[in-house]
Image (cartoon, rainbow, N blue to C red; front, side):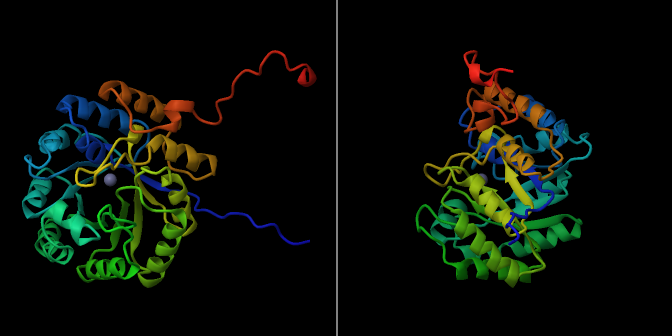
Length: 319
Ligand code: ZN
């Protein structure tokens, strides 16, 4: 008899909670610092081990994150949780280092049109500009990771050619970067594309660590996460209550909800170290605090382990 095929997936995955950056920056109403800190603290209790805590952008560019230093200062005592921050330039890098952040993420777009609206320069220029940032971080022994926004599709240019991604990853590699976050910023990726691109990148850049940042704009984020798992990728970003967006990508909606990702992974036997029940409670708290969520199946339907009483008239099933 032939051996039936089974799907082999990694035994564990590492989830980085990005709501404090990606989620909050998409909120039009000011979220008071103490509310941000409260949400971060509640999240930390669920077993989340990594968080993208803020972005050190110019306060005029994203006023919602103007309290970056203060948020970081007020969560310094949290144990067992690594904080990462996004930095757009050398000034932001200095601010992040001064605030005590030990891990930075660079912001880069895959396409020139997204880069022009995001960073006001072409992709290659933007990437060249990372050199002094990396030098400064190295001097302070701060780890720097790269990112590629709109890596799977750009709202202005459509599909992104593989060669373009390879060129960007190659430049990152030459700068000494060994961790790259691939972002589906506006939810244009599909599972086959994710599987194929990661397969190519993992073969061409076998010493690099790739992570996935998936928005659920078109309902494909979870399927894309599974495609990434099938390629052995174990690092994922997600956002509590599905918060998030992209200020420079029209119509972009939230990241895959952390509670949905943890639930799906747990159902498939993939350990994340995050407790689902408290996490769903935090999602509920976030929704209540901000007045909305960004799309959360767990808030809508609850986990699949949560069964309901059978209807009373099921005679045939009785005893
Ligand atoms: Zn995002």
